[in-house]
Length: 625
Image 1 (cartoon, rainbow, N blue to C red):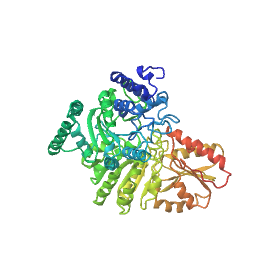
Image 2 (cartoon, rainbow, N blue to C red):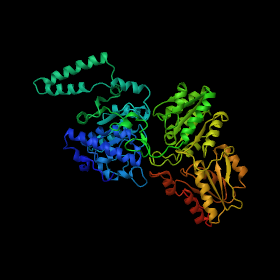
Image 3 (cartoon, rainbow, N blue to C red):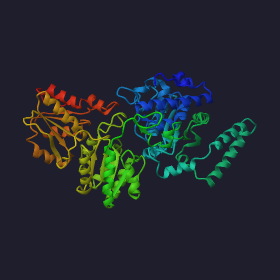
Image 4 (cartoon, rainbow, N blue to C red):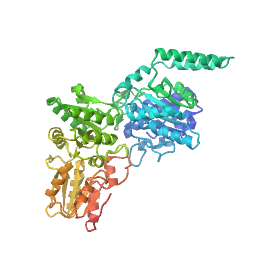
C-alpha cells in the first residue's frame, strides 16, 4: 500500500492545499480519499462505513474552516479518518488502531487539529458550546463546529445541549450528518421527524439567489423583509416548524452531502450567520465501496478484510456475545417474562437472533443507555425479567439509573456487561476497566464473572432464576481461552492446585487463562503457585473467603484487567493481614492496541505475572497498581 499512488491526494499535505481547488477537482480528491481509506482499513481494521459516508462533508469542513484554529468536533469520532488524513497523518495510517500508532478517534496528543478526545456518542454539542462560551469570555475569534450523526441524536445529552445552545445566541454550527443509520437502523420519534425534513435543498438555494438579486435593486431590502414576514406567517399556519428551530437554531437544509459544491456553499453561508445554526446534511453510509453500501451495519467496525471481495481475512469464532444471545433465546422460548434491551447495539451484543424470534420482547432504544436502564427498572417492577445487554464502557452512562431506579428498590434486573476488561484497539474510551469499581459501589448488586461459555450459560440461568435483586454478568470481547471448566457454583474456587504453594494467584473472568499459564511458568522455575478464581463479587464472596481463608494464607497476588480502585484486589487486601500484591491496569487510562499487547503493557499477561512473582518473592509487602 505504501507504494500505491493516489493521484491528487499525494499532493495534499494540509487543509490549506484544498482552498485553491475547483469543485470538480475536489470531487476527484474525494474519490481518492475513499480508495485510500478502503485500502488502509482493509489492512488494519477500523471503522469503514461511517468514514466512507462523510468524505465530502469532511473535505468541505477542512476547506471552509481552519482546523488548526477553529474547533471541529466529530461526535463519537470514529468518522474522523478524512480529517486525520488531511491534517498531516496520512503517512501513519498503516499504524491505525495499532499499539503505538494512530488512534481511531480524535486525540489532541496527535494533532492541534483534534480539539478534544472522542469515543462516546451524543456529547459533541455540549463540548462545542463550552468552547464557544470560552471564546466569548476570552474575547477570541474562532469558529466552533459540532458534527453529530442522526444516531447520536437518539442520546438525551444531545437534546440537553441543543436546547442550551439554541438559546445561548453563541455563534455555533451544528452539522447533522444524517445517513438514516447509527450502527443499527435508527429507531424512535427523531428518526421519523428527520424523515419529514428530508426534502430537496433546491428551495433554500433559490431563496438565497432571490435575496441576493433583490438586494441589488432600489428598495430591494424592504421587499425582501416584507416577503419574509409574509412567508413566515404562511409557514407557521400550514407547516410544522422543525424541532431544531423550536430550540432556537436557524435550520439549513437538507443538503446532498455528496455534492461537494452544495456542502461548501451551505457551510460558507452558515459561517456568516453569527448565531446558532443547524445544517442538515444527507449522506450515504459506506458510499463508494459496494460491500459497505449494501451492508453498512456489517462494515461499521471491521477487522482486516479482502479488498476485492470485502470478506474478512480471519475466520470468525463464536464469541461471548454470540453465545450469550443464543443462550438467552433458548431461555426466552420457555419463559415469556424474559425481555431483551440494548442501546443501538443489537448485533454487537449478540441480540440479532433474539430480535428476530421475539420482536415483541426486544427493545432497541437507540444510543440512550440511561433510558434503557430506567425502562428495565419499570419492566422489573411490573413482573418482567429484563436483560439489558450493554457494553461496559457505555454502561458507565447509566450509573445513576442503576442506583436510583434499580438498586434502591432491589429490582430484579440482569445487566449483561459486554466488552468487560481490556477491549483494545478502540483505546481509552472503550476499555471496560471501571465496571467492577462502579458496580461494587452500589449496595445489593452482585457481579458474576464467567471465564468460559459453559460458565456464562450457568450464570445467566442463575441470574434469571435464582437471584431476586440486581445482578450483573461481565464478560469480555472475543472468544473463550484454553480454560474450559464449569466451576461457577462457588463464589471463590481453586482452579489450579499446587501442594506447598508459596504464592496464590487470584483472578477472575477470562484472566484465569493468564493466571494458570503464569503458574505453569513458575513451576518450571521451581516456584509453586496455586490459582484461585473469583466467580461472584458481592456478599457471597465474603462468606466464601471466610471458608477458604486458611487455604489462601500467605502471599497473594491478585491479577485483574481493571483499575485498582474498587477492584477485587483492593477488597482482598482490606480483608487480609498477610501480604497482598495487586497487578492490574494501573490508575491510568490505557493506550490503544491489541488486547495481548495491552496485557504485556500492564504486566498482567502470563509472562508479566510470573516475572513479577519471581522478582518479588522475597520482598516486603507491596501493592502494585
